[in-house]
Amino acid sequence: MTGQPINRDKTLRRFVGYRMKRAFNVMQADLVLVLKPFGLRMMTFSALSVVVDNPGLRQSQLAEILSIERPNLVAILDELQSAGLIRRDPVAEDRRAHALVPTAEGVALCAKASDAILTGEDRRLSGLSPEQRQTALDVMGWIEASTRETR
Amino acid sequence: MTGQPINRDKTLRRFVGYRMKRAFNVMQADLVLVLKPFGLRMMTFSALSVVVDNPGLRQSQLAEILSIERPNLVAILDELQSAGLIRRDPVAEDRRAHALVPTAEGVALCAKASDAILTGEDRRLSGLSPEQRQTALDVMGWIEASTRETR
DNA sequence: TATTGTTATACTCTATAACTATA
DNA sequence: TATAGTTATAGAGTATAACAATA
Image: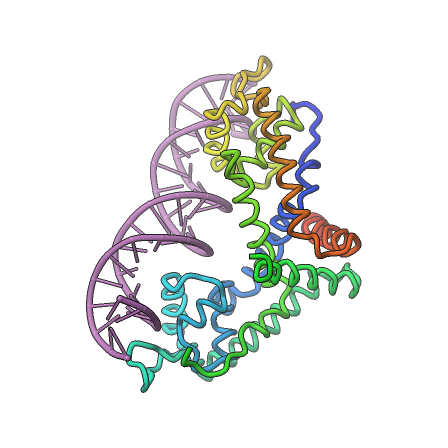
């Protein structure tokens, strides 16, 4: 602690992108801790959740929904399948494709993990008013949707 | 398009962390495009900005401000130094340390890049009211600050 | 002994090209 | 020829251990 007085990152904080990165790091760190006991990561949980909601989904559809590249999905699904949480069933009409189906264990674990995440987020955001929270959700949803309109 | 009707990621959207990740991806993609003409990345721009605001800063102070590990800062500063945007000056009182100082080119480029980022964010967020934008900034700042209080 | 900057290393996330088997 | 899933690979971002020079 021998340095000059410092101004820290006051200028950077004007930028929405910078603030969002730092806030997301907090939410992400929480998520890692909450999901670890379930043997899940953020991406494996996300994939499991979408498969539970959309049984029979194809891998390319899942990749598109999660906005990830097909090659990156393979390891995620391998992980979920080895853990016995999903199956890759053959599809009668198209022998190239796989139908993604959650197992009973997958459905149960997804529900438990979802509850844990909601509880964790409630605790983390407990100092915010419901209006602040809703506005933040609205803004983030709007930002994401703006890419589909503008481009 | 042979699959079943899909529910997409409706369940995942309940989670603040998931929405924040997707919104951040949009802001981050904008930032990459805006910074590319300046030869900067998000992390090199962030480091440059803090050095411009705090000339004479030590590397360990900069790492702490940006919440990155010291080893990861080395390549970032090498990149800025090779580009002639900062210098690593010797420090008289402590011959182990380096004082980070922006060059005139660094100060000028940082100002231009900052303007470009602000313009880009204004365009991206133009559909949001000033109140929505401010609330989002407040919420993200609060979330980040909550780690310093709670832990 | 402790600290500053550094090297080496590893793990995750992400992105692209090319392969195979089917269509 | 095009598509579904896969492999290989490479680039960022991030984290830890350990080293040399200096305190």
